[in-house]
Length: 390
Ligand code: SF4
Ligand code: SF4
Image 1: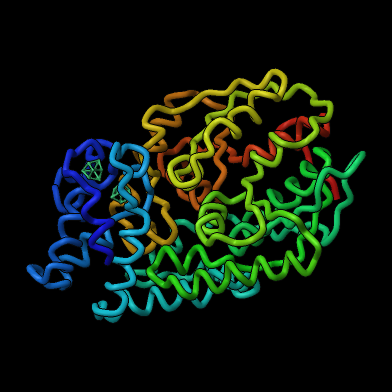
Image 2: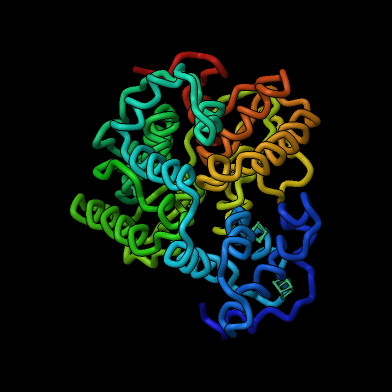
């Protein structure tokens, strides 16, 4: 861990009220300041990195709310990444936890395996595998988006759309809508790379693996002639932006903001928009998704309170820290329902799974749609629930 990064923290505590784990438990060691203090101890040698210390790092969601609230510009994102690497090197986790993590990394980043696994969600799940079953969505296979989609009108740029791993399997329609929207906004689209970008690995302390996959994404899109990469999953976008690739990386809402607006038709729905942490806190992309939604005629945009507080999804957090994740998910569902929406919108597949599962638990399920899917409906003059084009 880098002592200079640790020294940036002046212990002011401004980050505490925005940290979900501090909000849940009120424990200093489960706050950003407390975790930085633990990091300092392990660097100084005054503290051993044992299971107890590792547990405080494990409980961090990596939501980056503390990046937003810290007035001293502490690079907590880098600090927790380094701490996680150290934990992975040093700590031997309990056997069942190791099996769960192995299973998750053997399945989730591989779309074919994930598709196969989703067919068995009816099976009883033992102990630590229960959260996997609880979060598994009703799965319907969708066709992948086309490999090539021409721009409508004069071409502004050629973009590589990252279709992702979880996104491509569970939210395939989001990818198909994304290619239609990008095309309508003047972009030629290639989906030459399919699979994981490495964000899941990075979240779990496997930095080298995460960066290697990010480079593979870039190589595939460069080979396909793309001049920028577009993502529609906030966690993937945040990871690719942090990987410092040569190709520029844009969230799809940023690409839309820079594109050529087509004719939009009314979509009279009340949309509760939940900003995902990796879009707001990590990428600092806040105005673009809201502008995108506001541009849709007759759409009523509402926002739940506590936007800054994570829903508990956070990469694989809801699988490895299920109790805290469930509490945060239920809290988020309550806040979303208080806005009395027709539909939940969020720009990250993990948040969508987490909050829609919590809404079901609350007995008030809602349809979920990525902002770009709502924009696609508006471009096509379709309404929520209408079938998607073939
Ligand atoms: S990343 Fe989120 S959970 Fe972790 S310390 Fe910062 S605010 Fe708290
Ligand atoms: S991380 Fe930033 S906000 Fe939190 S205690 Fe340190 S300096 Fe203050």
